[in-house]
Structures are given as structure tokens and as C-alpha cells.
Length: 219
Image: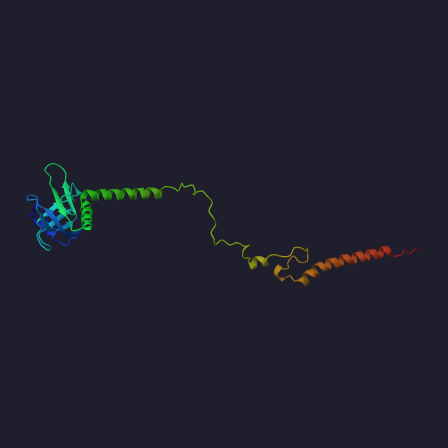
């Protein structure tokens, strides 16, 4: 369509970020000849100029209710903007390379307001699904399995604690070595502790034997 509206002209040349721009060939609507134009895509509006840097566009295409299709049979590296319905025209455009054609087709296909609404709805659906998954309890088979203790847990059998050792006592000689710390007991002390009891038993046995062997004295 031809445009003369001042607001659209101002928008075409404003500092609004450009989604894509570059040279494309455009097939005319009347004589079907190809014309080289400078195209600028802003949002869902595709402007085209006679020359790069012009302040007034020759025309614009509102990218709503259309599809982007290949048109290689009509133009080298060609694609077209097809508006469906009665009395709607198609715009046949040609890029300078295969890569440029693919980039332009992708940018134009994602430019419509309807496409943006679909993307927002899909993102909202994914966000809602993520919130539901986070709110549900963990019903996985491994949820109720016992978990291993932390690796930092102290094991007294791996690294004996000196305080634990000092708290223990020798229990073999009742009444004599109960309070002797294990780490301070020497062989001499053990010998003394056991030897006193043994010597006492031996002396008692010898005394009883002498009394048994002594002759009886009668008056």
C-alpha cells in the first residue's frame, strides 16, 4: 500500500530499534518487473524505501493475517508474503543469498502480533506447569529410601579420641586398678597389681601346709 500518513513516516525513520534491514528485490504489482528496494522491519510493519537513508518510505506492509512462503520458482532466493482471502495480493521478494533469504523469512514469520500472542501464551503455560511441578510433593520411588549419613559424621573407631581412651580403666584387678588410666598403666604396675594377690594366696597356702605337717604335742 502507498502511505502518506505523517505518523507512519515518523515511525519509519525514528530511533525505534530495527528488527532487520537490507536490500531485497520486489516484484511490481502492475508490470511484474523487479525493483531493488531498501527494506526495514520494525515490529509488525515492513517499510521499503527507494534508497538507503531516505526519510520517506515508498510503502509499507502490515504483517498481520499473512504467511511467509518460498517462491524460488518465481525469483532466485525468493520468498513471498501471502495474504489469504479474496482480493488480497502477495508480495514476491528476492534476497541476495540463501542465508539472507532464510534470515528474512524467519524474521517476517515472527513479526506478527498474532505470533507474539501465541509465544506469550506458550510461555505462560510453561510457567504455570513449572509452578505446579514445584508445588507437588516428591512421589518418586527414591523419595522414601533411607539416605546415607553425612560424610563429616565422627566415627570413633576410625580415629580414636584420646579423651575417650583416658576415660577407660583396667577392670581385671578389682579393687586395685579400677582407677588406673589405660594409657598410664605400665608392666611393673600390672605385675605389682596381680603379684600381690598371688603372693598372698601362696603365703596362705604355705602357712596352712606347715600347720598340717607339724607334729602334735600332747600333755
